[in-house]
Image 1 (tube, rainbow, N blue to C red):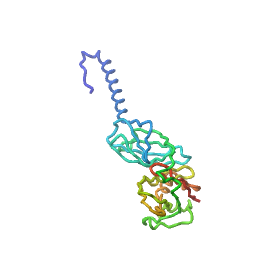
Image 2 (image 1 turned 60 degrees about the vertical axis):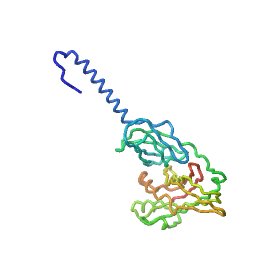
Image 3 (image 1 turned 45 degrees about the horizontal axis):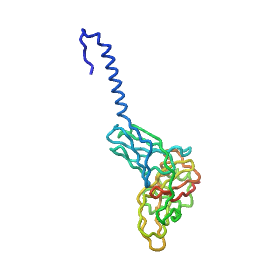
Image 4 (image 1 turned 60 degrees about the horizontal axis):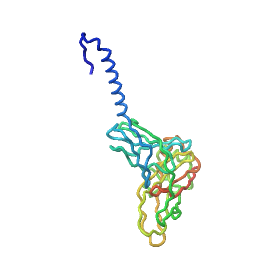
Length: 269
């Protein structure tokens, strides 16, 4: 944009310089605005899905990252929730009653905007005559040799923090729970978004599974659905982020379509 000014017009140089500075400032401000987005004041949580939206066209492709906050002294992991070319996204790794920082980045990982959100308190699950108290949950400590299919998960008497840390670090075993859901007689088949989360004694929080689950029609008796081993991704993530495997009582949360079905516990010694 700079070009030579004839000597006869030198008296205009101060004005021209001032104009150029103003233009540069405007360009800088416009560039700064173009490199950021503004997240909405609230998120929309519905049926287990959280819709996050923002304004501003700072990139052609966005990635949304979610981090739990204010959940105890534990450090937390920033989890990628997905990518989009739009100005909104639906994610499944935020649960009711918890607080999160949401980051929107461009394809290079540059943070374009962030905001803290507190999720609504969970509603208690009910679907017609089917209620949270109708569903019985049981947990069983298990470990799985690295590379084996889930069906080969072995029952263990208890979780030991030192053993989990050692075998996680050397890659020999994975740990989780056999998670069983005993369903009562159902009048018709039903499909829900089943969300399961683990939380450590110090508050390390992670959604370990979120998927559609179909519960079949049962005319008499009941049906039991289970994961051979659930949460094998939890302890490695915790160890990488916090540097340790905590001892104490861990919580598990189960939601169907975003409604709380069950809180349970297991112990790591």
